[in-house]
Image 1: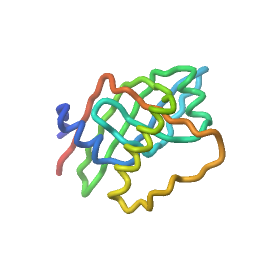
Image 2 (image 1 turned 45 degrees about the vertical axis):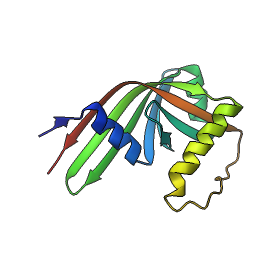
Image 3 (image 1 turned 90 degrees about the horizontal axis):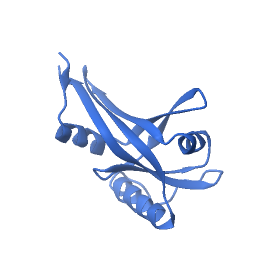
Image 4 (image 1 turned 90 degrees about the vertical axis):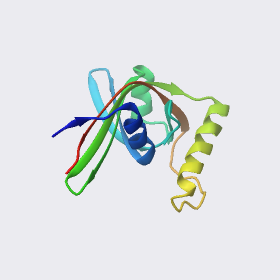
Length: 136
């Protein structure tokens, strides 16, 4: 039986996962892409390089963010309607600090990943949320 998650359960799921999926839409094209993120209860923070997802979110900042987990026949998922906001230098430093804290406990060696392109830090401000689960 599918059950609805309350806000505390949704926040628990959003805080526990490492990878989320951004759904964005611009110029008649829908694009879904996975990202590694940090969550502070109000927004998701991402550090990336300029590319398709950033261009699309700049064109249409209203996005969807999805997180899920599956284990032994049980699953939970959360969907967030949110708004893309590109961060200035101070915001980018905060994003990097949150990501560093988040991944330091996961065996990260503290080095930033290197990728070709112009770095972009952004957050997705949480709007409407919903969550579902099946427990077996």
